[in-house]
Amino acid sequence: MPLPDRAHWQLARDAYFRVQRNDKRIHRLFAGAGDPFFERYADIWATPRRYFDPYCDALLRQGKSLTLKQACPAEAVSARSSSGPRLQAPGFRRQESKNLKPEAWSLEPLQLRESRPEDAYDGCLFTYWVSDGIPTPGEPQWLQINLKEPVTTSTIRIIWKNGLEAKDLEVERYLNDHFSRMSHIKWTPHPPSSPFTQSSLEGAFSEPETFSSYPVRVPHNLLPEPRPA
Image 1: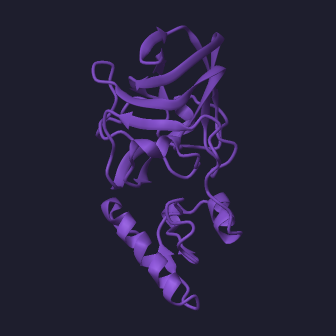
Image 2 (image 1 turned 30 degrees about the vertical axis):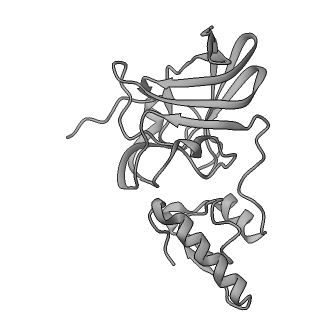
């Protein structure tokens, strides 16, 4: 079966569970991008070319999970907005040059799936959160992660969906619902090493900090929005 709308995912997974329970000889085929929500309920994956990722495909073939256990699990994840599925979404795809300068990018349509805030912090490299609106300084987009327990760290890493990177991030830190600080963070970009690896952004705090919640505000995309011809 093809991937249904997200609102019907639970119904689809329940149906696949009943099929396997009633007759283990039946192989359950799923047509869509690999997703941890269905990884234990499909025996055969038919991945469209626009979603193909060799690493994801290898994990599914080997029967391994698409997620890693979070060292700092979240209690809740929220966002200002989340996008629905888009067939042609504007974005920038990186060319062969290993830098983040504008001349190293070309404008190409990106195929996006429906996203939810929790997709940004589920331990899976193949799911992602995308805002519904374009971030601007006057109306930035934001994502907030509330941890189950306070954590002390001196670094934070954000892994991007390639072509949808952002810049000038603002990260506030809260401890038990009280504002902690908004100290300087030194950001270091890490471009993807191949077309099928993600780019990332590593932030270093000036000193170790303890917090239990952190909103990430996004005022800009990495590159200006393309102008119509």
